[in-house]
Structures are given as C-alpha cells and as structure tokens.
Image (tube, rainbow, N blue to C red; front, side):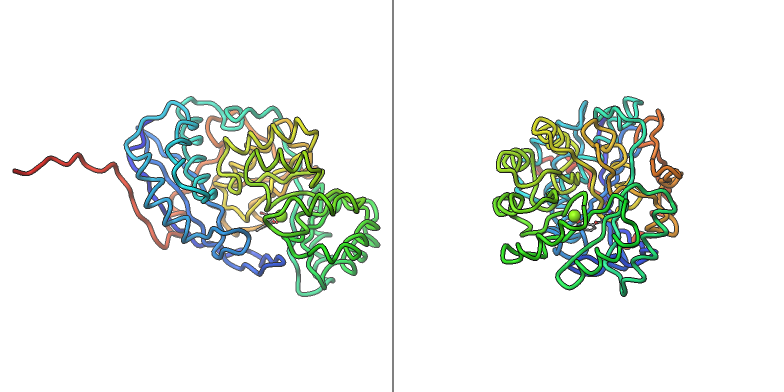
Length: 377
Ligand code: OSB
Ligand code: MG
C-alpha cells in the first residue's frame, strides 16, 4: 500500500466511571489516533500513552511530538508490502514505544485491509475467541468495589483484577475472598511496593491469587526475581518488559511466572509477537493488558489475543465498560460466558465511526510527503 498522508488527531472521551491506580485517577481519556490515507482506503492506529507520564515516560504530548517530527515523515509517501518494513525507518528514534506502536499498528491494519484477510490471522492468531477478565480500579470505598466485582461476575467475566497500593490491599483482598472464595482473582500494584515490603507482600499468599502484577519498581526485573523466590503467588510482569530481550532476561532470572503483553509498551505488533514467542519458549503464559483503549486500540488488542500463548484471560473487555459511545461499529461485546469472538471479516473487523471521531477531535494535523523541491535560478 502507498501511504499518501498521515493524520494525527487528539480525541477526548469521558470514561463512564473513573479509573484509579496507585499512580492516580483518570476521568477522561485524551487519545492520540493515527489515520493513514492509503491508496483507496483508510487504516487506523491508537497510541495508548496516558495524559501524564505516570505509567511510563511517555504521554499524549510526547507521542504527538515524536510522531509529527520523526515517525510520520519517515513513512509519508512510502510504499509498503508488509508492515514490518517500517521498523528500520523508526530505528534512529530511541524509546517512544507507544508512539511507534500506534504508527506500526496502523500499517498492520492497512496490510490486513489491503490483503483482505483478518488482522488476527495476519498476526498469526489461532483462537477464534478469547477469554476476558476485567481490571477494576481503586474505589472510594470497599463496598463500592464489591458492588463492581459483583456486576462484572454477573456479566460473565472470567477473572477479576483489582488495583492495590499500600493502605488499599490486604483488608480489601480479604473482603473479596470472604465473599467469593473460588473466583480467579489477581491484583496489580503498578510498582507501589519496595523490597522492604517483602514480609507484607508474603501476606498476599493467603488469598490464593492467580498473580500479583508488577509489585516493585517499573524498571526492575532483578529484584522481582528475588521477590518471586520468597512468594508462593506468581508475579506477573507488566511495566518492566519493553521488548523480547527483557522477556528473555526475566525468563532466565525467574523474575515472574506470567507476563502481561501490552502492544504499546513493547513498541508494536512485531515486538509483541516476539515477546509472545520468547515467553512461550520459557513456558511463561501471557495475557493481553489494556490501557483504557478506545475501540481502535481495543480491536487491535482482541486480534493480538488470538495468538496461541495468550492462555490466561486478558484485560480486554467490552466497550460499554469504558464509553457511552465507542468509536467503532459494532462495539466490542463480551458473551455471557466471558468471551469475545473474532470473525473472518478482513482487517480489524470493526468499522471506525468517523463522524464520532470527528466530533471528539480537539486537534488534528496532516502530514504529506515533502514536495520535491526544484531549485530556483
Ligand atoms: O497496569 O494494567 C495496568 C490502565 C492504565 C494504566 C495501567 C494499567 C491499566 C489497567 C486498565 O489495568 C486495563 C483496562 O484497559 O481495562
Ligand atoms: Mg498492570
């Protein structure tokens, strides 16, 4: 396909319910969307960076800058047979994985549309439905959290993950376990604990958790290995895995027994597939994490989750948990058995509601190939 133009947009979408983690509360999402104008069709990508650099170093504004100044100009006017051809074009830019992923994934979206095959098959997916879990943020009260869990269990979700931090952990988990002794339950600390907390973290073992996600520093997998040796519960790595080498090192060190793959965090579908493969060779099951995506990123997460080693329920859940109106048609829906099905429709399998995208847009910029400069005499 030929990339005739790249359109950057920032959209704003209010969440139906606030989402709070150990690093803060989000009530509205600012989202950078990438639209590719190709020969005869449009393709889309979503940047999952947050408004602030609190989950990782990137934010909506750093991603906008890097995409506008470096990534988009490097692909404008180029012809691609395969999405992977863009990777060397981004090579000079260090880091900025979420910005790179948004552009790379848009090119994968384009490749699937052009080849008239489902994106999930293009990525190497083998499952035609994926098991779903939910991630539930810190609430104003434990009662409110228990009510939310009960709603999600009734909706069919197969695994409940709750956010924890010092002061919102053991007592909360105890109330949940007393009420639901048998459910698949996990927790996510988003790096809120330190090695001095090891005795405290050992107490999590009594709740028979499926996993404790990223208990220690965001950039560490050495001390996670030390901690894992002292815990019965499996550690799941999120923030600290940026590429397949990290996954390999974490596998060799024994830093965790499960990995959460977020396609934005690792820089795009190509690297996400490599992380998946490395984990598989270390017998580490993976699941697909979420970043409060709109329908575009969500549809891409659904496609990625069909790969064979995605063997635990992910944080990929129904559009309506996040948005009054999602920007795709149909919205992502979850069955009463807690599954999302994929179809054989070409591309991402969900139409983008361009009218709604336009309505939510607060800034927009188009990049076209630089016109050939003719020298003036
Ligand atoms: O750590 O998984 C995380 C949301 C924002 C930042 C980090 C995380 C999360 C989630 C939300 O847990 C998952 C979702 O999209 O529902
Ligand atoms: Mg996490």
